Amino acid sequence: MPDARATVALINEFVGLAMSRRRHALPTDERERMEAIDESLRELIDGAKPAPKRIANPTAAPGSAPSAPAKPVAKASMASALTDALDMSAQDQGKIRNVATVPQSGYTPPRTPAFMQDYFSDDLVPASVTADVIPADVVDPDGESIDLAREARVLLGLERPPPPPPPTAQVAPSRASTPMPAARPASRAETPAPTGTPVIVHLMAGGTQRGQVQAFDPSSGSVQMTLKNGRTDEVTLEDVLAIFFGQARGQESPDPTGTALIVKLVNDRQVSGLSPDYREGADALTIVPNPRRGNIDHIWVPAWAVKAIELA
Image (cartoon, rainbow, N blue to C red; front, side, top):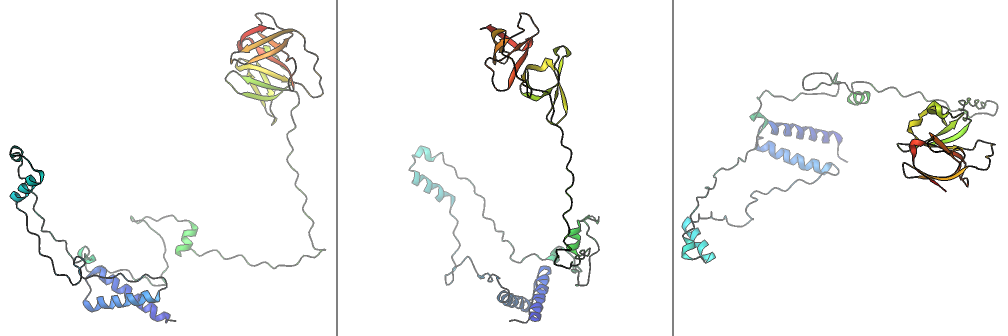
């Protein structure tokens, strides 16, 4: 197993050479030393990738002679080669004109890398932070303090983590010391179920509302309902399409009597049965389904919700 101190020394030496290489070009001996340390560290560090292979001249294959530069092609020869390849007539050949091409650039990018000294002064020295230095605050580029969460401040060393709670002694409970279960807290008083006649109010705009009514007076202009949660709601009769009244608990409905008819509502729905109070020009009528369906006792239909009435 390699010595940990020797490994740390190699890492520190490699970091120092890398920092120097960022500032300026390294001498030959320091560059070779850095490459040797790099190879050593790659063998010591588990999972490190092998060093990339270096090719002295990637453009030329090893052992091959350098190729001679290509000779520029004359403009006249290019035009003649084009006419020969296309097999053009003399008339079409006269339409071909030579176009001046852009000369090949002689710019060669620099091979030497740019170092930090090319942009900064020589007195640029990285800060030396030792292990005993504790940060006092975190600021933004403008020098303003940044408000960090407690977890982040603990992670950066700005605060100490809270001490762990003291361990509690585990004592086996005895039968005598076993506490009695606490009394179950009294539950909230449940809202009493509303009492009255169940109704389903069908609205002109669509949809329904369900509840119970104590009394229904069409001359009041509205219907007041008690909802399931105990609250009351009031619906204006002008918004009502029809009200379906159910049978109250313990109440038996008498046999239906009256005029047999079929009422077509403005939403093209039909309601049929016997009406005990039907008369022409009335503000509303009552319909008792015949035969009765479900728990419906009777239906109240206002005149504005009626589209047509057909006597059965």
